[in-house]
Length: 188
Ligand code: GAR
Image 1 (cartoon, helix red, strand yellow):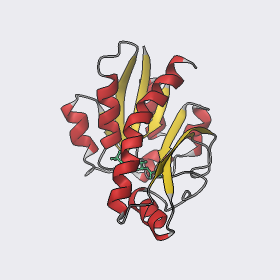
Image 2 (image 1 turned 30 degrees about the horizontal axis):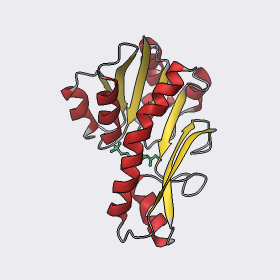
Image 3 (image 1 turned 60 degrees about the vertical axis):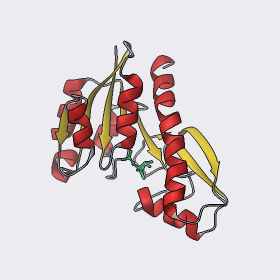
Image 4 (image 1 turned 180 degrees about the vertical axis):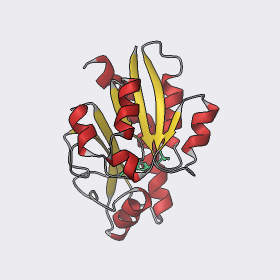
């Protein structure tokens, strides 16, 4: 059995989609959802699907507390699904090439500190981009700079609001993120 640990900070549509996708998979299980945000909608999703959760603060993440909780779960893969804090180096060092992130743009464009969620889509719209997309990548010590695993583009030249862009990007995320996770875990 391969174990996946999810980190998220917000609505959790990717988390819910990943849980649904692996629900009947006897080889892959979601062992926890860790969040920095006690008000995150993702906690309701976790409860609904009976997945254990952990809420932590900055000190608990940068100190040893969160790492200790991760180690207890022994995950094969850590998945950042809308996790908005920088991931600490001491955890990355413990899980080399076993932490992945999804970013809602075609990195290296629209990445880095402060570039997350809606801010990305607003910047993409302001720059009149004809296309955007998603990037799934390994996590290293720099924001959004780890080795790419997967990218997919989508045309947005007819989009007039950031919400229209979100809808297209989310569709890509929901199709491809579980498939990429499955592929990593089945062809390590
Ligand atoms: C997703 O679009 C994800 O790509 C993005 O946050 C959203 C979370 O949505 N992540 C980042 O911007 C990371 N820099 P969700 O909570 O509905 O899954």
